[in-house]
Image 1 (cartoon, helix red, strand yellow):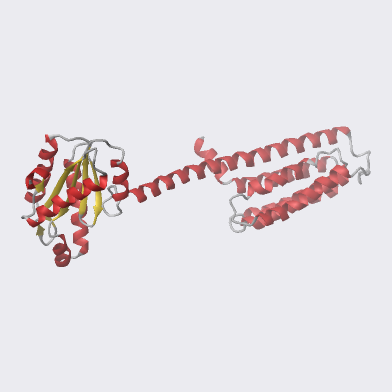
Image 2 (cartoon, rainbow, N blue to C red):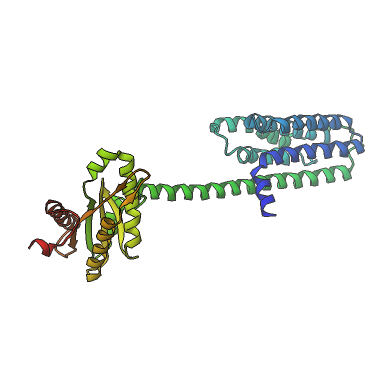
Length: 346
């Protein structure tokens, strides 16, 4: 049932054309019963017109809307002239004015176009409200039963079609809002994550660290990464970055965060100062060094060097990063493949 409703409103333009076609067919039968030949012929002509629109409805939506926006008020005006102002035809152009915008709200057209095609309905409303002339059909033919029935039918049809368009538009709006939320989440993810490794980028990790009071900050990079790119190509270097990222993430505790700092440099933040940090970092360093990355034609041995610093109340984030960075480069100069702590250089 839900799927049927979704398709019904998804194709609301098609169902609206079908609905108006059926309405004209219905009125052609009614007017033939009451022996009103001109209205019978006009309604049959409209049935053919909407049948043609039904065939081309996927190609020229705005053209179809314009045809409807002219046909409905013309028909309503003719009904008013033929049957009198009490026949209820006034409700059709009333419903058509907002219907113009609801029917084609998704079309990429200037507002002026909608205003122009809604003018026939506006003129029809003013004419039918102000016209008090005698109906063109002989009043003997216009029984109270016919006028009452026709008025009620016009009201019901107008309310139903306008309600149908409103509900359809509401569903389109809800669908658009859901799609926008998905796009926004995707854009937020893209803006906060590195496109290659899919982990938080520098901006994101800085924002997260700003919310912490005590933490251990680690900067590490891949030893001799430039030579890997120069020897095997950047595509191999990119694979090393991705595979190493997954390996490190699999070994980090759940409360630790990892981000790409830039190039082959990464930043890891532990929200505490504990001996377990040293154990975890040493385990990560050893695992990377001892387990090479295999490719189809060769195997690459990779190692990392890291610098570790602790947050202090008197130090800013930039100062702590600078300390970790200094320790990282100290490790580079003294042999690489190691984790360097402040105490190691005192």
